[in-house]
Image (cartoon, rainbow over all chains, first blue to last red; front, side, top):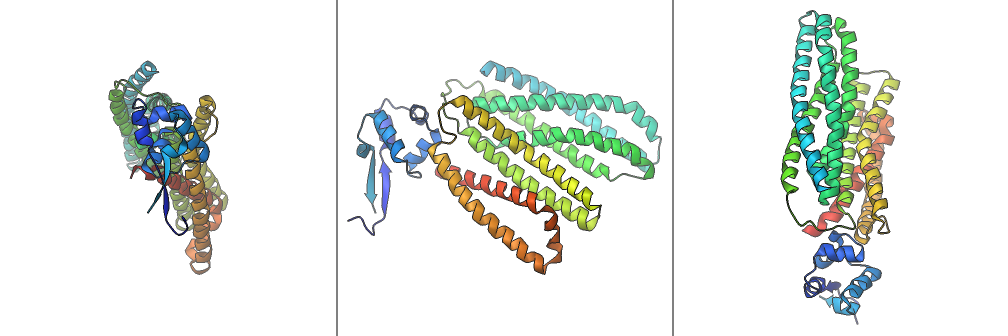
Length: 74
Length: 304
């Protein structure tokens, strides 16, 4: 079904941060043990996190992973 | 921490201004010394009169350099943001500190060789003075700029530091470029233009390589200390790991292509034979420059 199509991983991380008491990128980075630049890169769509990191982020926001990260077909 | 940084900033700034005054005195001393040698004046008594004040000035320079390094490390620790000027000063500060000892050796040689005419050591001595000058002036600028920044309130706590990672790459680029440029110029100059014995060329290349690589070794050691103290597990975070993996791949491909290009060129252009002398430091500095610049590129690409 997805063969031959360009698929991108998108996310609502920025929205989640704002819904979660408007926490900063640095606060989220500290909570899950990465650098601020990693969070910034994920939000900009320039870096795809590993499954482990995506699960850590989902756990932090108390949401299922697919509510934060989803596939986007061009 | 903030208080220590402010005190250290202020003391370094005062010592820096004193060092600049000393720098002017020492350079006037060198210029007059050079003129005395050209005019065949009484160089011996001139050296006797001014060598002790010049030596005292150099002790002040050494103290200033050590304090400046301490302040730069405090700043790296406090600001948690990468800053090219700070990395550049860390690099030039260490080279400038090492060159203080070089200056002593050069002046010692000059005081022995002046009877045979104007020694060539003056050229290296004035290049060294230019490096000191750049360090002092930029250090004043950084201290004034950061002196204001320490008054900003409400800094966020940073558990996993990424500024040291980026600063280490800046220093890696500077070490790589300066190492490459200096060993190529030195080797070309003393193998072809002003030939000196091969052992002296080797000794020069080893000394230059060590001087160029020391700032990188020191910042990597500092980075290791930071990582041990962080206790967050893992040397790199996920994105940094991906960046250095990509940079490593690019480095191995590009360095092999460049080395192969030089190897083939040597068969057709005789002037490239000087690479036989410097192949090892050349490859090390090339790899360091490529790796650090690629890591920086991949790491910074996000801010487009």
